[in-house]
Length: 123
Image (cartoon, rainbow, N blue to C red; front, top):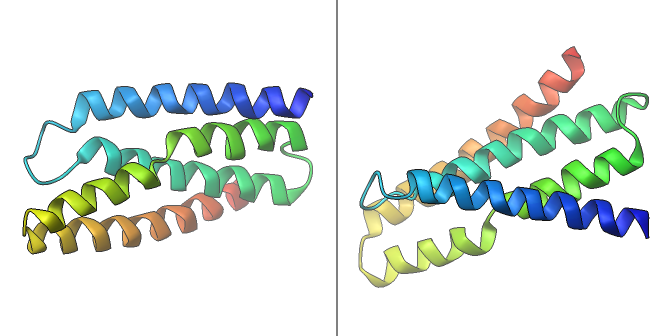
């Protein structure tokens, strides 16, 4: 039961932070959802660090990993929103911004995971 509550708590906090980022940054550019992009990239960086530290053994407990990776990062990152925004760019015929945002998000996410894992090795 404790693990369910940790995931629930982390997910709620992550969702709140995602909401705040979207409210703050999504209006900056007409064809680029900066808040969603930041949530996904920061979530990738954080999950890379959390899972990297968890893999080291003595840095994070299973419960801390559940709270941070499964809970917080699961609630914070926004694949469904990402997919919806891609769909809206496609249906509006804005192929240039669709490709820039899609491939930029994927490349930056993979890079952020790698950086997070690298940082966790330094700690």
